[in-house]
Image 1 (cartoon, one colour):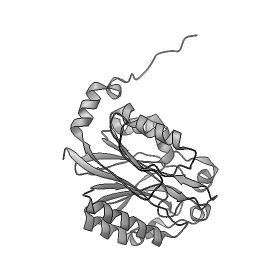
Image 2: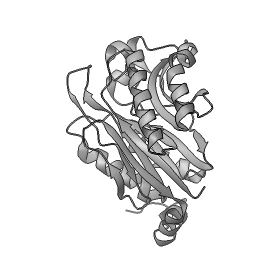
Image 3: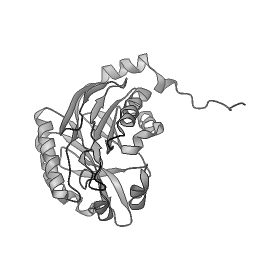
Image 4: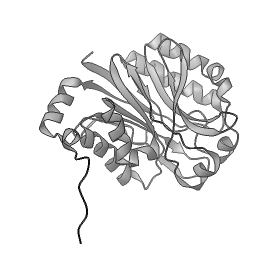
Amino acid sequence: MTTLRVAAGQAPTACGDVAANVATAVRLVHEAGERGVRLLALPEAFLTTYCSEAFAAPPSADDLPELLAPLARAATQSGTTVVLCTALDHGASRTLAGVVVDVDGSVRVPYAKQHLSGELEQRHFTPGDHGASIEVDGWEVALSVCYDGSFPEHARAAADDGAQVYVNSAAFFVGGEHRRDLYYPSRALDNGIFVLFAGATGECAHDGSRFAGGSAVYDPEGRPLARLGREQGLAVADLDLDLMAATRAAHPMHAERRTTLGPRLR
């Protein structure tokens, strides 16, 4: 397909209440399906929310298919593939996992956040050791979690591997909006790809601060096709491969990047 309808969703979540947070995800999936969305991204730690209690005792990876059964049914009914993030216990390690719920009802965990941000995450989690992409209606979709998107080489590696969409599940705090609004349009423009950014909203149970929301869809020139503030809802947009090709032709930074800049003289 040369076009793909996508959405970035956001809504408040409850610390450690996986069942309630799954129910919130189900509601967003049904809303997305009603609007013809084929790919929905949800924020970082959406199943557990971002809090130390849940990070210390996250759900088991073995239990994930059962926990996500309502979401899997919703994905099948809506025809919408869902990408979300959750704290996850793998037995020997814990990760901030990128989870995919496919329209066939299957649940996969192909990715784990590679760049852990701050003492809380570094205390509880192990960083992932590989990138990951999925296919949605013939589109190559790369996965990332929050701080991953602060590193240009992360999106670059995905684009080099053929990704046309870079999904980021994130949790920025109020006060960090300027960085949020620079990182993700830049990753789009750097590589001539679409970026689907899902930002947490509501109150952070860890320290009472507020999440900044800002879920958005960026075109390959870094312009917002759709964007939210801190309200609940969906940012919905149609992606077009012809626009991507035209942008890459006009701004070929991805193709013209030099592999070396030679020695630095002083």
